[in-house]
Amino acid sequence: MKFIFEQPPVVRNLTLLLLAALFLLPTVVTSPTLLQIFILIIFYAYLTSSWNFVGGFAGVLPLGHAAFVGIGAYTSTLLYLTWGISPWIGMLVGGVLSMLVGVIIGLPTLKLRGAYFALATIAVGEGLRVLVENVENFGPFNVRGPKGLLINLVPDAPFSAFQFQSKVPYYYIILVMLLVVLYLTQRMMNSKIGYYLAAGGEEPEAAEALGIKVSRYKLIAMAISCFLTALGGTFYAQMFLYFYPKSIMGLELSYEIAFIALIGGRGTILGPVVGALLLRPVSELTRIYLSSTLPGLHLVIFGLVLIVVMRYQPKGLIAPLRQLFENRIIPRLSRRSARSGAVLPSNND
Image 1 (cartoon, rainbow, N blue to C red):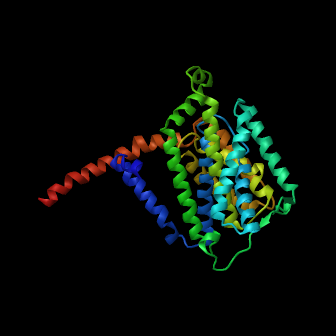
Image 2: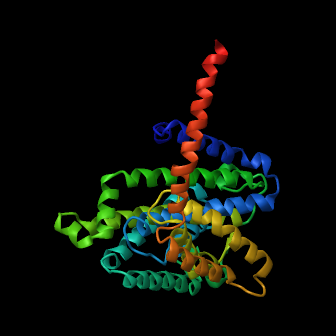
């Protein structure tokens, strides 16, 4: 909140107004279907913002992040189904496990450049998915291979079960998660790690020459990104109560996360939110109306949008939106606010 109150009055008021609107949205949107679309928009904005720590700031292009979503979902669900451990606790365990896996993967791959890193993350992500699909039991855990995991709905479940009869609690949980990850993004951008990552992402040789351990900071970004992504996996599992390897660890999800970031504007705070707000409804509408005849059509649409955006706005759609906001909207609102302030004293007189 301190960051918000340090902004100019117009920006601060607009931000507070937007936050109020987001928190009041479930009182206006009563349709479960429509509310679920909003939840998914925020969910994908959260996943993409988590991806942004390594894909946006570290100057690499990870294309296997669905694996970490799956690690989070499987860890919390298996702990709950096997030993009755609350998914809230399992969520943190999954985050830590995902972070460890991310570090193990990042140690050799983050030294790769360009397409080699992207290909390596695809290979690792797909390898983990195929492994889960072909495993029925892992120690005391019944993974159930390609059949996936089903969480029984418990009537009047306590808060510790992370199950709710209404979609409203899920909306607020994922909204808070998104606000937290956006806050962490802002802190990262203005921290020493953020500056080092930016320098290492643009000119790695020059940064290394200045004594910056680029690989070390990329690994820190990877660990943070994997931890946050896994938390999103637990949220997905608890909201839908059923998932299988291809649905939660498939390349389709990895590509979608990357597309949203690239089109919205990677390496920025609000780029992933803009990308999710624009692309996620397209994905939902094609899934609802065309999934039986043209499965995967939304990825084709995303690809076409990506080509156009990269051609005319290589920094993503957040760049022209920021120019519009800073050059048109803020000056106009500031002038209007100044005129209102000038009128008030005369009225009091």
